[in-house]
Image (tube, rainbow over all chains, first blue to last red; front, top):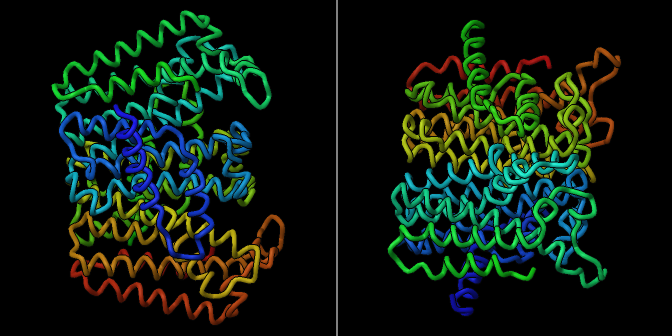
Length: 295
Length: 295
């Protein structure tokens, strides 16, 4: 993917993200400010990009896929706001900015997260969205996202993560945690894009396999980067997981084996694209760029 | 409505509420225990009953309406769990039992609320649900609930409530808060039931009017009961709103005027049912029972 088209995609996504956050009721201005603050915090917009790319791969159009792409990003954003709260990870900073609850207080941050989750489902079911995608595809995507973000998906993964922090977790538990917590939304993005583009059932399955592989690979890379990158401000390894002795892929297998796992998973992700006949270069590059990222 | 059929309805609703909370993954058992704990806390199940009654009034069947009825109750339950958290109302007790976060700790309570919201959208979009209701009605109900529970609905009302607590709120602000916070889900229940039963647009509008009237009336009754009922354990008025000098309908208008408002709103709710030709007695009785409740 060319840098220019990546920039275009991010602009497309961010314009839509802000569009759905319009509000002219002054009584709830603070809530929307708080929601916008965290949506505005940038990031790679991987999940919405995956929706767009899988939709394109299967012949779908961007206009139809955009509200679903935004829904993914809103769910991701709500999970970060709630994750940072004092009763969870108690993080004062997120992506170089003060966390939502530091700026807007805990009560508003909690509610902003809650409202972002509702907004995700609202825009996927909006009349305009349904007119483009059709009621059947809309409802399938809603079900996919609800499944992957709920108790048996992302939120379940967060609960397992909380438990894993308290003990010496086994590989299976770490893997299950990440497949749900990080992998949940990434798989949802791939599956939803494929559904919207009109993929058949076996292709939807392979879209999920791609998502599963890059989701786990992403998390292993996070563990590697936690060890190898240094926090410029503090001059020490970032590794918060390291500090609290949490089991990570690196603590289980060492860095070299982890790099090999990332490469194998990336290969498997790319291989899952074989069943699609259209140009797969954007999704290949996305998988490779995640495997080779430096932060 | 006969007592026996009310009991049957509550059993029907509660059986379905527990059915959707099945889980056999031990790693996330605690999360489901926490979700079930708050769903189990009883209450009058007004919102799911409204879905069923409006669906019946319009010729719908219970099997089709049940997942949507449960969705309302899950959203209501999540809002109570989050409302009780220390960063919100900081309530240790709810319906005579320790609050969710007292039993399961704040992190799990937060996540149980998040997961209950996802579950609501998951069951409304589940293949079995869509098979019964059809994709178009399902997606319309999803959009209705998402709208009424999100930033411009229930959550928005909670934000206005937080602001109102800090100042001497005006009637308009109290009314807007309650119409969103309490009224949001009640209106959603009526509208969703009507949609599922096959009501036309003007009937859906009147279902919303019914919901709006009993929603505000419910809140005014709450304020009246806060003053008039006594907490048996402590031997003093319950009125927590009274203690923190929050503006209430009673503080604005006095008890007698408030009783009159409740009666007028109840009449208006019942009048809104005129456009439906089927037997309206259950919904008339429901409106009257809320206006005449003692707690």
